[in-house]
Amino acid sequence: MRFGVSFLPDSAPDTKPATEYFSDVLRMSRIADESGMHYVKMTEHYLHPYGGYCPSPLAFLSAVAAQTRSVRLMTGCVLPVFHHPIDLASRIAMVDAISDGRLEIGFARAYLPYEFEALGVPMDGSRARFEATVDAVGRLLTEEGVTLDTPFFSFRDATVLPRPAQAPRPPFWIAAVRSPESFVRIGELGHGLLITPSGTSFDDALVGSYRESFARAHGAGAAPRVAASLPLFVAETDQEARRVADIHLDRYLKVWTSALTRWDDTTSSDYQGYTGFNRIARTLTAKDLRSSGTAFVGSPAHVADQIGRFQERLAADVLLWQTDFGGLGGAEAFRSLELFASEVMPLLDGAPAEPAAATV
Image (tube, helix red, strand yellow):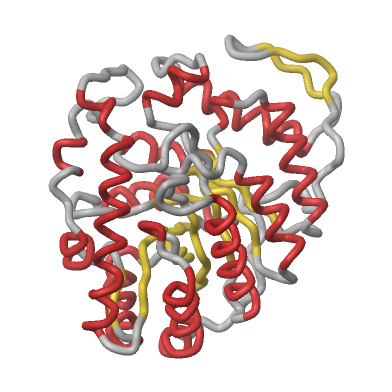
């Protein structure tokens, strides 16, 4: 089992200045590196307190690379429908070189209507655009003189520079949330799976369908990989952990559901089941996240037990801790992460291991 930290800023200038936010998460990144964790992950979003502080995960991870020695760097995720593949592949290769081959790339399809509208990208057709862009990025990172002609972009004889430090390229992960077809397709493509279970509605069988489709497509020569991102807060006692974490979890839920408001009246053929789902999200509380086992809050012993129960369900290969939820930072966040490393990881046999190679 591998561990890391997963960041998704949910702050605005009137709640937490960007300089303070990045100071906090860069320090948490250094703690993760120094304590033997395996990953630092950052997410791309725009225009809203939900993620808007980080329009460029690759820029953030370049800063992390300069301040750490061995921790792996993961985008979680970049949104390829908003990028030309040559630009994205070139930036990926650059950060892979800066980090001496520590980069892994998580892709997500994007799902917030206001981002598509502002950037002039139609939501309908985004699934096909997503697959075409990810495929093009993969080819540009592994081939020279690439020529492609798609409904979304075209180019001839393209060789991106620099070339990736890792051979054949950095490992790829793809996020999936609700659509069974997405889980199956990720397995068929041979990429790692990124999930963010939340609330009470995550269907464990979706992960099973990913593993089954991976095995059918790739046999015994490659192994599926599952990474789950979940809020974490550790304190000396359960009571103290809940006292601090619940305030920040409720703040996170408020910001998230604010970002989902446009789904009250947005429809898209590529996002079946999304219209109106904010009505359910708005009912969630910090207690719901804790009781459903999708936010780990408590003393070291309690958190270790929660992780054990979660792993009985999903057996994830990587657990990525959201340690910045609700503007959480400063001494409380640093202490939580240090307690996890010093008191929880030994209970879970979470000692550092060599990074896994790319699957396909």
